[in-house]
Image (cartoon, rainbow, N blue to C red; front, top):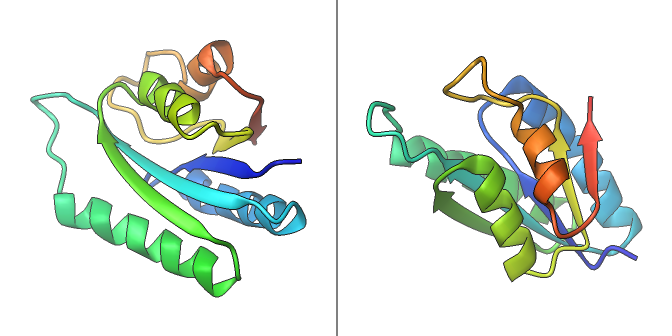
Length: 127
């Protein structure tokens, strides 16, 4: 049913907890899992490329070890828009994400809420 599952990830505790749900779904549906990290394009924000690469590699290794074919993608931009663009590019059948991740603007609408509005496919939001 879900051939391709997109799993946006960041360094938040909730993203780590949501990984178990993404893994379980991918295993149940024999899915290809795409792990996406979006670095916000804010000139004032400091992002360590090595940390992002390490996060993606740890996720990829973990999913591969569990027997799930996994690809990683790193992009820059507004997380909600990038997540939806990547979902469209890879023809994702499902996006699995947490309700809250790490965002620069605390008063901004959640990324999950924006993804739900814009996504080209169903979105499973894990509380």
